[in-house]
Image 1 (tube, rainbow, N blue to C red):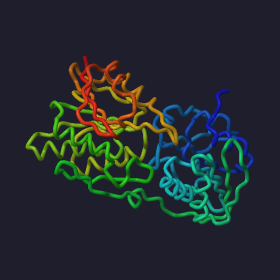
Image 2: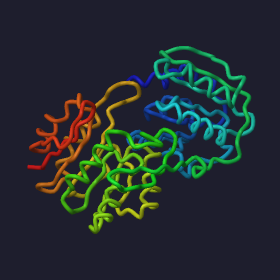
Image 3: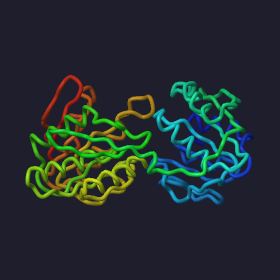
Image 4: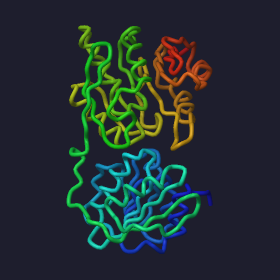
Amino acid sequence: MSALPNAHEALLRNRDLIRGRLALIGLSDAALLSRLPAGGLAMTEHAGVFAQFPVLKGWLPAFGYDDQALQSASADTVVVFLPKARAELTFRLELARWLADDGARLILIGEKREGIAGAVRQLKEVAPDAAKVDSARHCQVWLAESFTPVSAFDLEAWMQWHAVECAGVNVDVAGLPGIFSDGELDDGTAMLLRSLAEQPLSRGHALDFACGAGVIGSWLQCWQQAQGIEPSPVDAVDVQSQAVICAKATYANARALGDVVASDGLAGVTRKYRAIVTNPPFHAGVRTDISMTERFLQQAAVHLQPGGELRLVANSFLPYEALMAKCIGPVTRLQSDKRFTVYSARRR
């Protein structure tokens, strides 16, 4: 039996804390479900984890914060796993209080290196009497038996809008807690957008991989429109539920064209594109992890038309140029500084 993430192992060690109807928020390994004694609700915001959910009697799967399986006052024990983005913890705790029935207990589990000590302050804002009940697997387990449920969980109330400007083109972008670069245009994406203005893509259907809140696809179409060019559709894909929710809202607000879908890598993509653009992630929790981008590069050529372009921005220290040349074709550096580089590769 393969090892589970430390936080999941810590829950198994404390399974006696579970009573009544169970809800798990932030599941990161679907294998946990078969090792728990009973069913319940299991929510993940990761499309790859959701795709691996086994069909188990008694378990109700949910993808993200807008899944219809999430129902008010439906749980007697709510387990919240600590997210990597601290802002998302407040979001998860609000969902937990909405899922909780009267008299429910709330369990927070997280690794020490991921900041569980600081997260406890957020927990105590909604459950002042919360107490640590275990410390194991490099994790802490906190239990709250006295907190006030909430009667509503409204995504619209949590969504924040901010303006992004680059090359004289403005786009309003939606944001939710936990999304990448929420509230600002990160420097890497800004360099990528400048390259799109200065060295435009060939006309044709494009894909934004790891789209986040939909900045690249919506901005590109607004820029094309400002140049008097009929906008080309830009499909958008991301592994995270909040990203897909926000990208759909951003696209709708900008009247941008293209499908926005949840997918782990390119598993959910079937079309071939004239261009693929991306600012891919390179962190998994607190660790540098480029494996997602490596898998993406290996798959990308299949989804590019002959002669199609892959344009990618990344931290300059990451070893992507050789991988792009191997997987796609000849690589050109379009823009670069001490922090970021924009690469362009053409499919052979």
